[in-house]
Image (cartoon, rainbow, N blue to C red; front, side, top):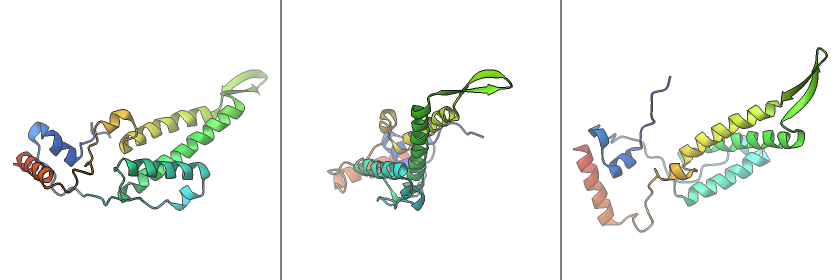
Length: 166
């Protein structure tokens, strides 16, 4: 059962102001920034391994990667591997194949076509979660290097948080 829109991260709600005046979760877990270790199942599949390496580098450069992102990055890399395998099969054999069923000549859509379509949908969803689409990046705010540790900016954020929770 779905429950509607996914909630905004607390930091985003504070920066944008509390719409609806719902209380802020002051106990929201904050994962440690850093690169997660590549899982063994990803390292064994060359396509997934190259996707993992690329994705971790991109997310690290965007300053959005945490060690808690290991599973979603793994899901993305493995799903990308499935998509590439399906598209290679389609490239090699075409979208359809011909067969005889009870004397009737039929043209059937390859199963890889459905796999490719399903994996693209998963990749789009996972990519949005990771901030890989232009529209999903507009909803992400990170500290710029000059803002990190800046006492004035930190005081402004603390004041905004106090207003939001008060």
